[in-house]
Length: 345
Image 1 (cartoon, rainbow, N blue to C red):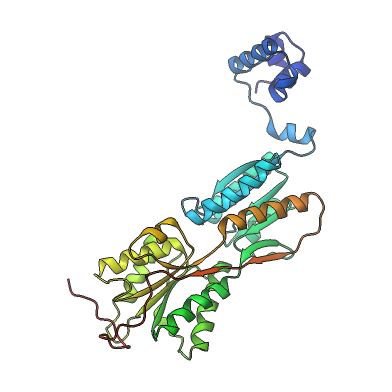
Image 2: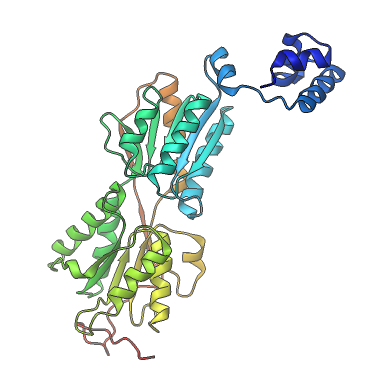
């Protein structure tokens, strides 16, 4: 590897001047700075980030690991983190895991080599093990909890949000309320399912496992799960669906369209998470909205408080907001309360 000494020799400056030219260019004359830059480029010099961080006893870098950057919820989380970090002079190194534990592990290994000051992570199911790679790093778990002892977590009250959604459907007269649920090894999905179960019980409705299908947080899986539920026999299929995140909600809407079902005339639907498409499509989707941007900013502020040695709570939960739009309605009078007929092809 080309070292700083070689760059300094080619640029005809001391190693200290070459270092300043590359790391603190405002302290070096413009002509000298340009000469050092040309020498570094000619030699293919790449700074040793790890060694620099060790010399400086810590960087101004934070790690951020999310599970699906294409999901608007996670993109908004990242925006909140980035805005707070920028305002405090930190750089954010972001990684996307696609809900894959191996990708999460590789992200942690890469971060370990860059010595970030701290980490914000939306955990995969294996995070409680993968985080052993970063044993001394301050960590904030965002949106989910890994179950690690002493973890600091920022998330919403998932159970209360789900309870509000299902109670709304029950109050409209729906007696068979299905759910497209997330992975049950992820804390948020477990909590939303618990809210669904509690709302059914409080409404005097039985819990029916055949009306619950896994969607694994993806649009395609949500579509398949909703299709399975909506093609049950007429006396068994749900008249309403509660869907556990916005990607699966997209899939559920597509499944209803595949089957020629009209929202809310033939099927009422509530999704968890809000987005622009949910507000602007016809009909607009009734949702449990999370304060995604606020979650991101709070997670970053909490991490910075940890870095400053301030005491922070182990768990902070923000409230969700139930937003009723046009995708839910009472069971129509011309339908039996026990069935919704799926139109033929």
